[in-house]
Length: 510
Ligand SMILES: NC(=O)c1ccc[n+]([C@@H]2O[C@H](COP(=O)([O-])OP(=O)(O)OC[C@H]3O[C@@H](n4cnc5c(N)ncnc54)[C@H](OP(=O)(O)O)[C@@H]3O)[C@@H](O)[C@H]2O)c1
Image (cartoon, rainbow, N blue to C red; front, side, top):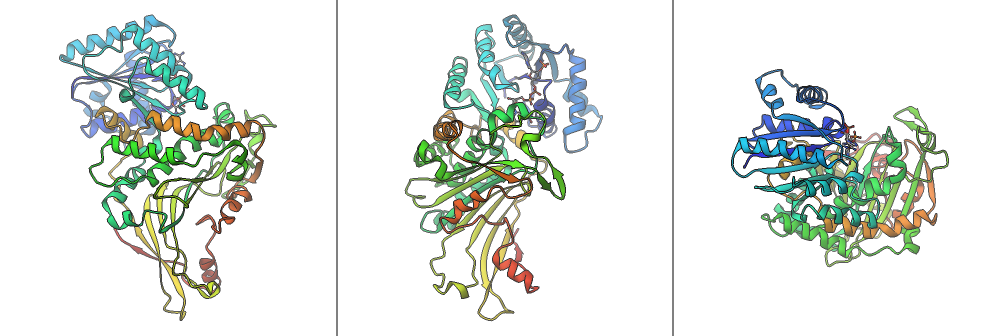
């Protein structure tokens, strides 16, 4: 690869120290950074190159999850870093930055690339793009790329405004929008798992699938993000981006193993285009909105949302969302997709459950002890794929018991979302970044929900911290004859527990 400068806006911030420096270090020690590489950190603080390197080193000791040795490798890694003071609204600072980058590029020789990473508040994105353009920093001899973090706008109009500002300096092909859920290794394996297994592909339709459940539960509350979160809520913080991405990754059909980034992104766009639109007057029938009240998490009492520091006592913000969506296309017509996500819930868990239909289930349901077949993707904090099947219960004549076949995919040693994503951006692989079409279409779908919330047309249900969310989220599935899997022990497991039987047999298949 040509000499490459990593230009980091917000180099003194939280994301940089927690994620970006550890990821760069990981790529460096695994030989994945370009041979000729420099990082220029930017911020208003008056750091020198030396004090900045000390800051980076400190971040590695604090946040890289393996031991960082004080050796020549670390020293040569830190030598890649330099710092420039930069106020976002001062053009002369961009001109100075350009001179520094050019002087490094001249020393490195040949055509040179620039990767701009905006690790700053989103309201700065537009100004930075304009300054890059006006200072000439955007004129490159190699490629230039831009990495930005979600949130991409606050609603449909602001997202479009932001995109038009970015488009002044970067083409769509040059913009790499991070949604770190797409960097999670199980999410990246989801598509490959479907593509590489014809048996899964064959089952991936409404003919066999009864419903899909996508859950992202957190135990944490609003923490120190009150200012941001009280304006965003679960709908903007999680649903419009991470949850919609999981929905797309689960439901796309890419028929061959050589799919390109364009193939995958086109299929994702097709899914969003096929989503049955939700009219504002119907929002209350398909969306459940909740806010945590006081309760207990793992035995420890915690306060309610409106008692949290920085949150107004009469805040009507949502900390929980559940939704029912339908994809109106050949594969998924008639299969409900249920999504839920929230804070201060019983356990931390991100998972997708695919529930299969039971065409052969006996009509004498009371005697039928079989359970639906399930395919479960555990995305975090643990990773794995589980298939639930039925088997004869040898100890109870005529009864079935579920067996779980567990597949634990090998973890690539030390792989973490930001390492994968920065590596991909350096190599021009946009597969697991968010295309503008996805941003625009997902905001289009969410916009009536925002409007209905704003107008107070959707009830805000309180739920006790440490619960699974409001009861209305269960009713959303119950009206279709389903229930959320794995919230409580299943009827079968409860009966087994009562009778002292072994609950579910696990078979490991890895
Ligand atoms: N933190 C996370 O874990 C996380 C997770 C996902 C997404 N994000 C997103 O990542 C971005 C950065 O978040 P963060 O948590 O790192 O924010 P942060 O800790 O508040 O850092 C903001 C950075 O911006 C710089 N900055 C602020 N005003 C500036 C100005 N006028 N001119 C130049 N630089 C300025 C600050 O440096 P100086 O004070 O030195 O100027 C600082 O380095 C945001 O878009 C956020 O939404 C963060």
